[in-house]
Structure formats: structure tokens, C-alpha cells
Length: 314
Ligand code: CP
Image 1 (tube, rainbow, N blue to C red):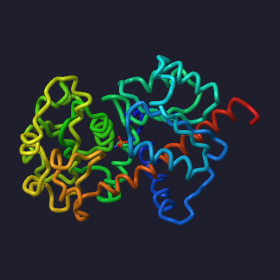
Image 2 (cartoon, rainbow, N blue to C red):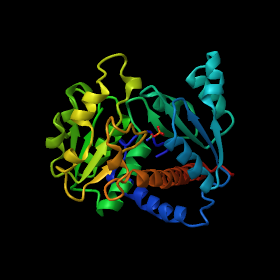
Image 3 (cartoon, rainbow, N blue to C red):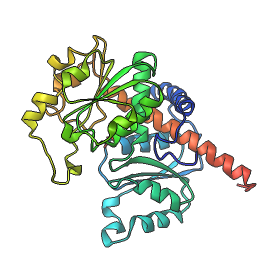
Image 4 (spheres, rainbow, N blue to C red):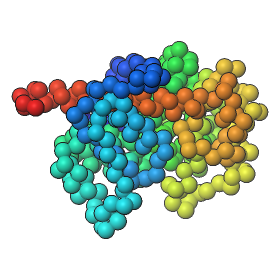
């Protein structure tokens, strides 16, 4: 592939290849000599039109550890504020010959559109309610390392499914790898026709968590609720917040995940989030760097292969 825009176009063997490579980067990241030169000579530009802590920091670290020249565009201070469009901004940066463009945008489909206009590799760092592919890949790596496999697991994704690109990318990936995916949340926060994806839908947390191997909690995405249904935090926590009482229904060795940012006391009890016997939330962050290193490594190999096929002398 030239880009990483979503999980949808990926074949299960490609997912496995990427995760296997990411595993090697997990080991590298633990060593005191973290640097490899696989992106040496390449330029990576990070364009985040929406806030980020984990994704932006890990893409930056991933690029630097692999030897790329990394530039973070401060989009809040850019000429977008003067009325320049997303495409004009992208074409402007494209003219500076980046090799890797990492883009987060609040509108679903914006990153795909941008990828059609530039001639470098584009990595989707989250677009609206559409996809967040590197999040699903880092979640998959976390699950595979914790459970020893990435198939025939029962995985409950809980909370605000309707507004979540994390849920969407995860359910596509976990379905491709032949897991049983349950979506758990209030009907008002469930996308319509979601059963078409081959998932089971629950509005009762305890029923949805029963015998689950993995419990993945999601934040209420208030910024995407468009003034529609916004549940009260107290009521939401009571019915859908992950506490010890509800978690008891899952398997004894079930792991608890959260992509972050987390709202303690809203979708998850803080003591569960901090319980190192159950929670793999910090491992998810750790896997995020390794997965982004693997994704950029593979795209750079494809870029180089393309250049060689065209007979361009570099
Ligand atoms: N999980 C995730 O995408 O976090 P950030 O918004 O902080 O990047």
C-alpha cells in the first residue's frame, strides 16, 4: 500500500506482518539504543487539526527513532486560521517534498481526500468518526501480547460507539481476525445498521461483559454530539461505567483497555484503570510507538520500491 488510511483495505496477513514487525520494535524501544536508520533521508510532517496527546507524541517519537526528519506543524498557528483550505495547505506542504504525511482531522473522509492530492505516503491519525487505523493496530498488538493470540476471543467494546473512530477501526480489524465482537452501550450511542458488520449489540453492560476476554472502554465524544443526546455523567457511570461489580461478569483473566483520553468516574472507575493486574492502558501507549514505527517502516519500503520500479535515480 502507498498509504495507511484505514483498516478496511488491509488483508489479515498484512495485519499480522505489521504486528510481527511492531513486536521487534517493542524490544528495540526497551533498549538503551533505540535508533534505527530505516527512515533516514525521509521527511515526515505531522499535521494535527484536532487535539492529541498519544497519537502525535508517538508518531513523532516513532519517526525520530527511525531516523526521519520530523516536523510537527502547529495547525493552530497555521494559515488555516486565515482561511486557507485543507487541500491548499496540503498542496503547499506537498511542494516541500515530504515522504510521510501524518494527518488527524475532525471530518470523516478528509484524510482520504487529502491523500488523493499529494504524492507522498499519508497515514491517517484519526478522521472524524471514520477510522483511526494505528489505534486499532496498537490495540491488536496489545491484545495479542496479553492473550497470546488474536483470534477466537470475545471482545466487548463499550460506550459511545456512534461517535468513535476507534470503535469502528477496532471492530473491522477484530472481525477480520475472526473474533467475536460485542458492542455495548446505550441505543442512542449505537450507530444504525451496525449489525451488518457481524457484531452483537447489547444495551446492558452486565450481559455484554459476560465471559468477555477483553473489555475495551470508550470516552463519551461530546465534541461530536452536535447538541443531540448527551447523557448525564452520573446516570451514564451508573449504567455504563466500568466498575468492579460489572467487571466481575467478564472472564477472571479479562484485560481492560482504554484508548485514552480517559474520563475517570464517567466511563471507567479510576481504581480499575490503575489496576496493573487487569488494565493494559499503559501497554497500549507503549505499543503505539512500536506500531507507528512498523507502519512507517513498511510504507517507506513501498515508497522506495515504487521509486525503483519507476527507474528514478535517487
Ligand atoms: N487514543 C488517542 O488517539 O489519543 P490522542 O487523542 O491523545 O492522540
